[in-house]
Structures are given as C-alpha cells and as structure tokens.
Length: 428
Image (cartoon, rainbow, N blue to C red; front, side, top):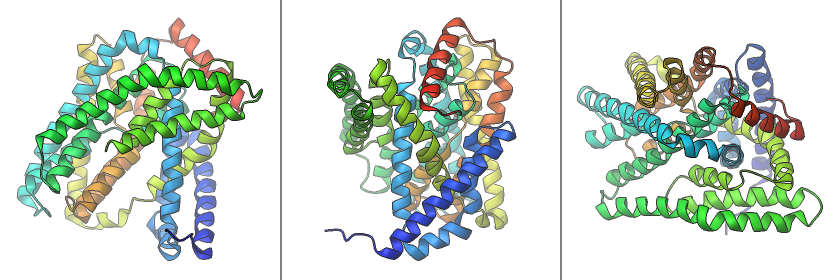
C-alpha cells in the first residue's frame, strides 16, 4: 500500500500550485495585453520558473509527481471540454479536408524528421539503434498538441471558425496516428516489433471509436436525463467529468494516449441541452481559470535552457527547429490546397497545427526513459515543443487576418460558444 504524502511533501505541493497558478495568471494577462493568447504567457511562466526555482523546490520536497497529476487532470478536462464544443455537423461535411490536411501534415514532417535523425546518427553517436532514434525523431516532428491548439483557438476566439474546427480535428487525427507510431517505436526499442501488436492497436482504436459512438452516446444521453431530475447542475457537472475520465481511462487501458479518449468522450457531450449546457459552462470555468493554466505552466517547467550552452546542441536545435516548422507548415498547406482551400487558409492551418506543446514534452520524456534520446537530444525536442507553441499564435493571427469574414454558420456557432462563455463567466 502506497504511504500518504508526508507533511513536507504536502507543503511543497501546495506552494508549487499556488506559485504556478499565480504566475501563470499574471503572465497570461500580460500576454493578452500584448495581443497574444493567454496560453503563450501561461507556457512561458513555467519556462521562466523552470528548474532554477520550482524545479529545485520540487527536488527538495518530492512533490512534482503531485503537480504532474493535477496537470494531467487539467489536460484531460481541457481536451474533453473542447471536444464538446466541436461542431460534428460541419466535420461530417468537411471530413475529407480534415483527413487530407492531417495526413499531409503528418507524413511530410515525419519523413523530414526521420531523414534528419539518420543524418544526426551519422555525425553524433546515439544511445541506441540509430534507426530507432531516427524513427523516434520523426514521430516527435509529426505530432501536434491538441491541448495547446485547443486553448490557443479558444484564447484567440477562433474555435467557432471552420478553420479552427478543421485545425482541431486534423490535430486529433495527427495525434492519434502519432501516439500509435510512438507505441510502435517504443516496442522496437524494448522488446522488438511484433506485427500482431500493430494490428491489435489499430483494432483497439477503431473498436473504441465505434463503441463510443454506437453505445456510449446513447448511454450518456440517458445518464444526463437522469441527472436533470436533481434540479441543479451539480450532478450534470460531475457526470461530464466522469464521462471524460472514463474515456481517457479506456484508451489508457488499451495502451494508447488518454488524451485521445478524453477528446472522443467530449464529442459525446456535444450538442447539449439546457442541463448539459449549464454543466459544460460550470466545468469550463474551472478548467480554463485554474486547471489549464496549471497544466501549461507545469509543462513549461520541463524546459531547461542551460543545456543550450553547448554549441553543438545549440546548432542541432536550430536546424531541427527549422525542419520541424517547415515540415508541418508544408504538410498542412499542401493538404489544404489539395482540398480547395485558399493560400491564407492553408497558412492558417499550418500555423495552428505547428504547436506541439506538452504532447512533445511527453514524447521526449518517453524517449529519455527508454534511452532512445540522450540529454542533448532531449533538450532539443523540448525546445521545439516550446518554440513552436510560442510562434503559432502570432502566425495564426496573421494568416486569419487575410481569411474571409465569418460565414452565417460560423456566426451562429460563435453565438453558441459566447453563450457558453457568458454562462460560465469566463472571458478568454
């Protein structure tokens, strides 16, 4: 039986949360004053605090796992709430576009990342198999960060736009494939790849989505009808959280990333009635005001810029950062143009999907744990995650300023999201 945390660990945990939330709030508001989304300041708050302050405090008190647990909860609920705000009707009409953007935005950076990894393996000695290292670097290049993308779109008031919905959906496809590829590469690095494992993983993903839509959606509707009888929003709020966490737990149990399950569960909460709307509004308040800033700031804590004092590491970081940005932009832009979207719409999709954020941090941590990455390569991947998340919002704003004004459907969707924001009292 795991012992409860000691007094010092609890004290450290409480101080960390308080400092993280306070600094994230201040930095988020500062970013908004500078015409940038709050997510930029919240991520930067963790980078500024970093190992030099809270990292040492965490090492002394041993409370970082508790902070990570709160951050994980915030990440899952953030993705679930944003999934509930996704317009599935629009997606049914634009599914082909989302798939094309996703595939091109995944395959091109994946290929460039593998090529860069092979070159790096010839110049610098890698900890393990050079081929596994190259494949792993390709996976790190191709992923997007659904939580960061979702919060950026919300902060910039773009979630109701068709491009915002397409960006989020293409990011979901990217991450679903990315987590699957990460599972494959991890198996190659440990026990070796068995073809049966690949087929089983694909079967799990397809079966989960079909079961969630065919069985889970009717059950969720019945559960909310029962929750309405209480006469207040509390049971509906708790039910929404339970649905999101169960979805995350299901994909985690199948060996996949829990973020994917949380997003699918959020889709089941979409198209809400009055009771569901009140539940999502109240849940949105807690997530966007407290849990999401803690998650983003805690992700920033993983960045240690002192490793860039090594000239070789710095040069490698610059080259791979350029490859990562160009690869994602080129892929998303190509997919958009093949789908008949305009040049600026393609650039907007590329800018939105370039944010890799905490998802890439998780990928880097897996690589370090499995000894696929050494400390230098790990630092470079972390830098890519931070920089791409910071440059995505201004590039997205620039591209969206050239896109056509909102359509009637987008205005209608925006009014619905504004009603949700007014109901929960948040203003992002």
